[in-house]
Image (cartoon, rainbow, N blue to C red; front, side, top):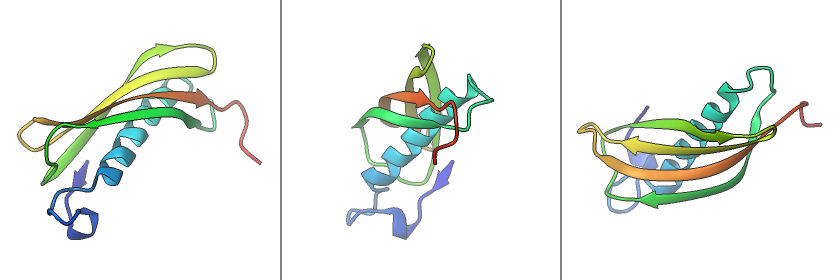
Length: 102
């Protein structure tokens, strides 16, 4: 969940697309990692985001696993505003780490 603040907005007063993309990425990475709790983490392999409407106010991101293999997890996520309208969506592929990076 994120509350819109001036330092997170673009010159139109809407939450910047980079902030939204980060929210989507974290939601999907968390969903991917939930299948592998023993893993030290996951890394983004690919990510595609779509911005559907201006994002203002309090925003909530939700991530879901669509398909999982041995090391790759395919996810989707969306961000909703306070009125439960979808403001952004994303699909992504994540690699589950087996050991901590050096």
